[in-house]
Length: 83
Image (cartoon, rainbow, N blue to C red; front, side):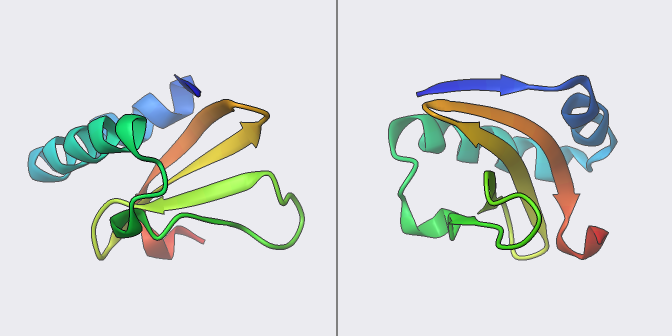
């Protein structure tokens, strides 16, 4: 598995509260070891682009990636109610 992050992802990440950033960092380390861990509530978004995966960071925050083969390109991290 390969993980990449877009500049938009880092813009979103840098706007997060420090505590959420620390939680996201811990979750990412866990994701690298076990992407199927139940705490992520990992799922693909149904609709326009079914390559988009969502993972739970906290009750109110999530991260989203485009999945192409074994590559996850992270493009968003932030509140669940973004859209």
